[in-house]
Image (cartoon, rainbow, N blue to C red; front, side, top):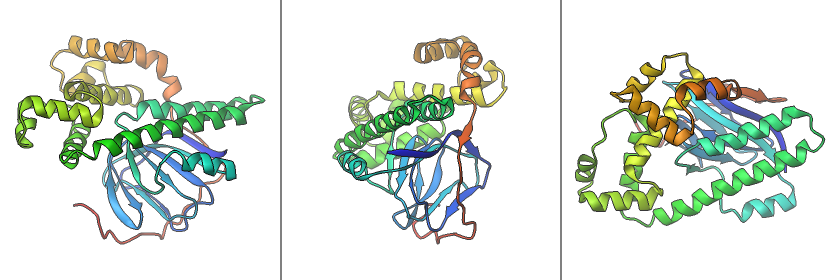
Length: 286
């Protein structure tokens, strides 16, 4: 398993679409951090933030966001025969989206791969291969969980709800209102949410807010109080307390200690684009 290029915490401007009509000569793993439109299995579909997509080599690629910023991590890699056997046993379907729930732990693997590629260490090739294999294993775990969750007759409705929470975590999400919208009792709704996503709904809302806060802390110079307010917190003290409980440090400490290490970078020898490639949006949701 050889890694060709890697990009971490990389943002594309509003309206930017990556177009590769003939795909790549390698596999492409994407950790999608913002909502986006993807060409997958000949259809243009909406992919949620916090998803993973692996394009097989030679497969046409078209993805991005026409209206807003698009952000992702990516790894281009090749497989030998032994690697293909390993990958086949993971159960990850190529050219489809896998919901990760929280992209941050997966993103960290991409960051570490990039750091190791830059390090010049004698065994960096071995280290990066191990990081990538572990990343793929962790994605495989999400595939297995998602397969079990899909057995619920309410899966699609809950998936739509979760997408709305991820896109607007600052909203005042009321459990009774959410349960009522799905024609479920409060207790049944909470039970199903945790069963499907592996996390309670209140904890998930908080996690989405804190994850958005982390992104804003290292990508903007906004004041912490302004970030808290934008995420629906009426008390800065409450925001700081929840942030520290989840991240293990205060927002100011996070910005200071993690800011430099969270800067985007690309380790790339050659990225191929075919700007004229623009598929018909046969299945695009409006």
